[in-house]
Image (cartoon, rainbow, N blue to C red; front, side):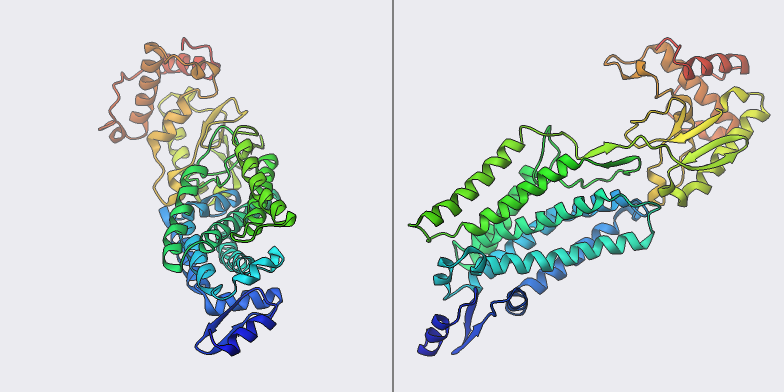
Length: 437
């Protein structure tokens, strides 16, 4: 290092500095200066571009079924975390190792003024901005009918996850050279995703939903998300306080103890706390319409498929009544969450594949209207009786023949067409849960 550069680094108090030829490159002490330095001299712009491409690809998957479902949007984007994690951690590791060359002495200053803190801050701000923008764009594509304020906490937790990944990469970059740091940082991030991003019996640090199923009828558990936020914040701060090679004083011991404490809290949370980050609101669907005298209610998030669903239901109801099988037609039909958890005790339907642009499955509609999924007897561990199975298949097959005989071709179920009186008796038993299950 030249004499001029040595003097510049000695006099300059900023958290980051490097050299370009014989000219010192210094970072201003301000937060804005730290962001600009890393953005100009590091891999942050490329990482932001890659993350933007990943988010765009994830949002375009499966025909974008998340449209208008606010919670589902927030839980859909994390599908890309498996690809985002190594990009963020690997790039942060490279920049932490490369941009802090010649500034190791600055690690002995306050931890929030260290070179590593500048990298974490820049990556947290830059990557989070791209990530949040992707969510905003998804929301604007098809505005949700309602706003759940708990979504803000869910998004904040996901942004903290990105900050944690940047912290992991920076910690690796403090230990090794840029090339090795990028590789190890990416691998450590992938390991963290593999170990802590799946749903468990209790709180999982990096679990963010990553769901392919609609979130209608549900909200977020504040306790679960709050615990994640506290743990992630503790790990980020602990990771910034941990600076290898800086030892010997009580203050440093306390800073390293903070990281150990944060890791211990994560381990404890993995054995306590709620098992689900979602709760069921119990709110019934309120997008209702009259279909041949039957009240059909869907969730407003699924308004775009209402006409198609109602059209098929209308055909099913008309066919049944015209043939004298009016008992098949329920007085009311409600959509329930795809998990089936609902307080509704009547004819129900779920909407899944049509949200991706697939046609409505008439067989599936008939099956959902016939099967009494609200009956507690079906929740028993032992399978239903043969009589129940035969009666359900016979009623379904009879209704399919009335709507379109082609529906029974390649159906795969055996059935016997029933007379109206027999259908009426079976349907009444099923809907009142008095059948021999």
